Amino acid sequence: MKAAVIGAGWAGAAAAYQLHKKGINTTVFEASHTIGGRARKHSSKTLQQVVDNGQHLLLGAYSSTLALMQELQIDLDRSFYRFDLDIQSADESFRFKTAPLPAPFHLLGPLLFAKGTRFSERLALIGLQSYLRKNHWKVPSGMTVLALLQHTKQPEVLIKKLWHPLCIAALNTPIDQACAQLFSHVLRDSLGGSRGDTQMLIPLQNMTELWADRALRHADVRLGRAVRSLIQVSSGYELNGEHFDAVIIATNTPSAIRLMQPLVSDRQQREFVCALSQISFNPIATLYLQPESAWENPYPMLMLDEDTQGLAAGQWVFNHAAMPGSALQNIIAVTISYANRLLDYDKKAIESAIIKQINAQSQVALPPLLSSELITEKRATFVASPCLVRPDLHTPWPTLFLAGDWIANDYPAVLEGAVRSGLAAANALYSSLY
Image 1 (cartoon, one colour):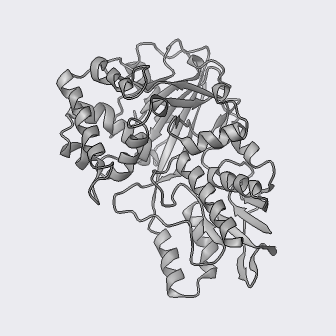
Image 2 (cartoon, rainbow, N blue to C red):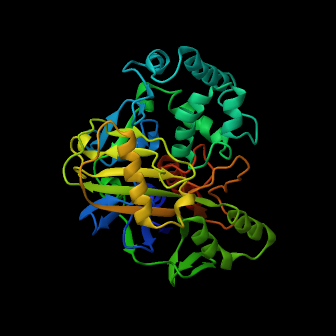
């Protein structure tokens, strides 16, 4: 049996590895010359450094991703900088940090020792979690994150300093537009889980070499080979004139639509493809800074107070000099989720505004900078609105499946969702053949 996986991102890599485990000969087609999808390495001439196409962050709750990496014999302790959940503002006026204790006692940290909030305001945290637990982490259909926070009487300081930044980081969608159910799932598997689930993991090497290379080492990977023709035949499919028994499309939705459109022959198929066109996307930008020397700020990650209307749009700043073993050494990365407002502005103006933002807020000034690069992923994640209907991995065509973080699952467009979808698509493909 021969299977084709179209796309070598995290979903495609997970699918190809799972198919290999099941003994299916797999060919992976990737249009670009680098594997990893939206979490891939980027060779920066400006920085003279290999970085990722964006600063990525995993949670300890990403069980499928971390289990797959361990199965690939990846040393997680050497591959990630792991630390207990610690949200601290750059100006040190706010801090939300879990305690190094077993669950549920790790949540005593923010309740008793949070900075920048009164104890009465912190009690609202218990109110939100109690409401979600009581309702089995289910919220009313169509509810936004903002509506959920208002319903559970979250104080303005927590909405501004905690819930808004976390929602933007997890869903890449503002709280007044974001799906409360997806946000509830993130809280369930992180703050509602063990101490390890709440921990943050920052990659110490680029994402392509971290695991995707290993996951794909047994597949026939064809880089720079876009699939121009997908034709259904009686015994399977032909891709670019080559026969396969089954196919997994693990691309973004525009590419998936392009591939499936010629296959449409009835109303059900037409409606399925049309539904994919309703998925829209938000960008994420990352500003990399190459300093002359290590930034003396001791924190690996700090929260910035962003200007939601202007160019001082930095939300999180990562100091790799504070992460022992990081391949990026002294590199500083600043993330800007929901970066829509920046798309029409000059990169140098954005860079200048964010550098000033960091120096104005941080207790430790940036060292002189040698170079910088702003990388924007225009289709980074789907817009996680409450009314969005995400497609199932099964399509109207036999032995043709979908994979990607935009496929229906409990998570928003995060890497764990992509991995889970890839594994599920591979299992479904195997079941359809045997």
